[in-house]
Image (tube, rainbow, N blue to C red; front, side):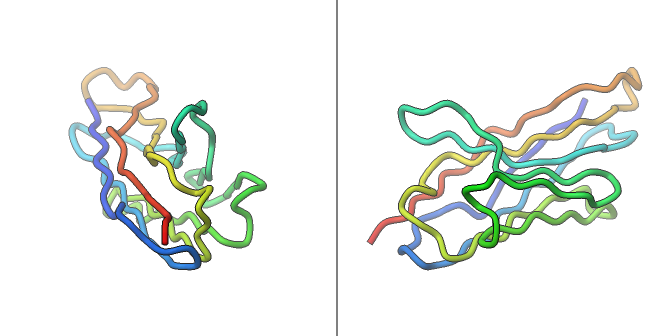
Length: 121
């Protein structure tokens, strides 16, 4: 199987920056798209950004121009650089990946456990 572990969350003031990382590990055969979702208190989980295996990207309108997703395929890691953070960016950020493991070579969707980002003065 494939495990995803996020890191980099924390407390930041409005206007500040954070960089989230998500490392995939396990019996990985191939990772296709990787992405970040977030869930704010009392709200549903929503897409933040996604990056395909060919580095094509897609962003939620609310984060365009402030947040950049990137990946390092050699490290099986996806990053989320967040700048000009707003109070409304406060949420648990979850890593997501479409991947195939060497266990069964079947495409599956995987989730990390999340990392908390709090934007507050």
